[in-house]
Each structure stands twice: as structure tokens, then as C-alpha cells.
Length: 220
Image 1 (cartoon, rainbow, N blue to C red):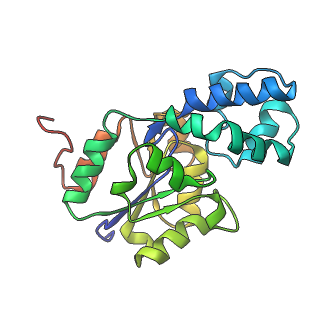
Image 2 (cartoon, rainbow, N blue to C red):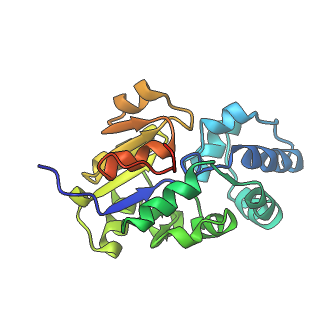
């Protein structure tokens, strides 16, 4: 029998928040500066969750490390102001905390703590780990293993919630149950194929999964 869940770890972008419009807007500002072609939100959605070097190489066929510093200096602050939590994110996090679950963010985003704070969600989390916090990014197990070590829990007591095949592969690598959300670029079939233990269409469906059927939202 599986151990009771004590910790829920979350991906950030397109799991808790919609950052896609802000990222697309700011990438196109960078593209204009660097003489690169503009990118669409649909293209950006396919890269969110990957390390920047891989994502930008996919978008433009080339990656220049100097772009990262330029983006951080000129556009990162604007991108963060455009991040919007999904409608059910705050009530779900409040409900989970009220039940005594420990919560964390594990993301391939650099300086994830700044984005989490900018989105107004820092109050919810016991740990926030971004790209600089681990040697190997997702889908390696390292990010989840580090978060579990900090929180003092085992894999059997942990869920990892994310929206991509990378997130589900990370969960499998760390022997954690992975919960897929269809809020990103992957549907139910793709998330199950990637190894999801469960797939949800909205964060509000998470509470019944870990609270014995008790809903997150009043009246649900």
C-alpha cells in the first residue's frame, strides 16, 4: 500500500501560473534587438519547462549565452509582471496548507524564487528550487531528490505536479508519483504516455486526490 502523501511539489510555469503571454512578449523584444525572427505563443508553449539554452535553440536554431544576461537585465522584470496564477491556484494552495501538507516548487526556470514571489505565491511554499539549485535539470531526478532531502520526506510520501512530459519523466526518475495537468501543451493521452500516475484538467481536482475526496473549492 502506498504511503500517505505529506508533500506536494509543483512545476511553476503552466502548472501554477500562465506565464506564456509574458514570455512570448519578452522573447519577441529580445528577438527584435538581436535580429531574430518573431516567435508565436504556440511555439513558446512547446519549450516552456526546458532550460533556456535548449528552449531558445529550438526556437531560433542557435543559442548565444549573452542573450540570457540581456534578457535578465532588460526584460525579466517585465515578464514577471505579466505572470498570472491560474484561477484555482490560490484557493488550492490555501486548502492544501490548511490540511498540513508541505508544498514546494521545483522548476527548470532560473531564479524561480523571484518569479514565485512576483506572482504573489511565495507564502505558500516551504521550498523553491530553480535551475541554479541543482547540477542536472529536469528530467534528471536531482531537483526532486534535493527538494525531498530538504523537506525530510521519502519518494512514497511525495507527489510531483506538472504539465509536461519532462515533469512526468522527472517524477519517474525520482520514484515519485507524477500528476499531470492539461493546462500546458500536453493533453491527457500525452501525459499518461509520459508516465503520469494521474492526469487532471484543473488544479482544483488535486484536493480530492490527496484529501480523501474533500474538494479544494467551497461548494465544489
